[in-house]
Image (tube, rainbow, N blue to C red):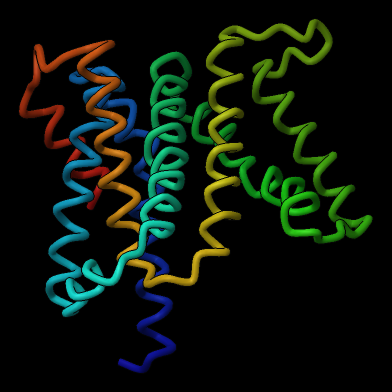
Length: 223
């Protein structure tokens, strides 16, 4: 198989797997609350990323981490996975899967808007038109087509789904400026994120009613 065909195959597999995420979120939240789901998903992420670092022979990079790098990873871990997924999972607990998933995917729009003050980039007028059209679609989805009355069935869920995209866009921008190894960055982000989630879990929820179905869902989300 040529590299070109292999790239298409990987892209198709990625799309098929990614398309199940909304359903996986919703199903998993039947067995775990959003604090529990995020904690176990983050733990699985740490394990998987540590294994990848080991296989790639990059564990030596952990010894070369500076204090500023750790502080930066602590900040990125606060944005993702902690704030981003915590807000997103709460949105999924309130909205239909297709609504939460679609509303969350306005993050490219937010990314474009935030890149102006943070990355000093300019927006072309065609991009502005595209943003207006996209936001119009968001209103249609949020109101479930009731544009005339402008009614929101779950206003908090809508706000959280849209708000989660802000954390994701901020994460992308600040992560873009970080030139360290990608796997190492993700591993450290999830280590710090797991600590944040554990604190929130112990304070707001707990480890009661943990089911194998919920753990399987958390593992699937990370794989």
